[in-house]
Length: 285
Image 1: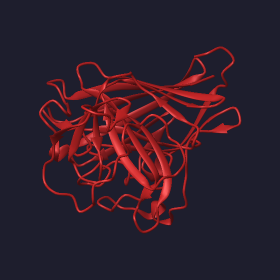
Image 2: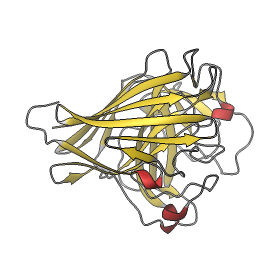
Image 3: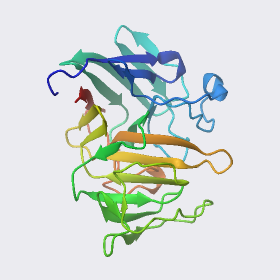
Image 4: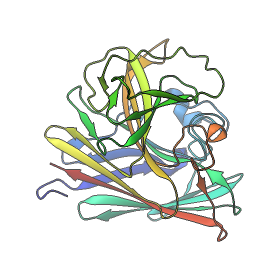
């Protein structure tokens, strides 16, 4: 953390999926929110109710259950620890302050061999001048629509000659593929242009800059695949009432839909019956 950066503060709502409702440093609230009355009355199996904040998406993001099985269930709180039981797993999260930032320690217990995805589905309140910094040239997957088809590119440029290749298109999506401007810089958020694109990048770290503030994410998960998903919705989604939302989502796994993930694209529970990982979030200047 850069000296002089404000201390990060967190608020969560265990009764409603363990959702992070505030992530603030100084006068800056980082989490984006929108009015979504369905969020308070969701039940397991419901379609995702996008109210913003940071949602715990596990064991999948897209597919079924929509955005996973944990966000729609009440969690149990014991001090700084909260937990949820789902049909196939038990997830525990402990959040603590650390060096001006926060550390969230996770433990998932399930049958050995159980495959899953997890995303810290953080939607951020970032201006059109914001920038998302990931490892330059890192392998990345571009998702043009709401399905599981993707194309390979090298972060952060999409659409430059020889940088995007057809890679994996299982099945057809009901949503038309989003257009991509020539040589699009995925890291530059810019003004609303009516597009909505997703990407998954092979890296464990991300920094969001929105002058004069910054926010750093780092993920540790020994022996598991890690990545960072980026949701760049510049009023392109949903079609009937589009809004702007920017997602920076540390992940276990390298796919949005568990059902369409490759053998090495999902986390797997070892013989011990549990997986542990740590998410660190730090403000910076």
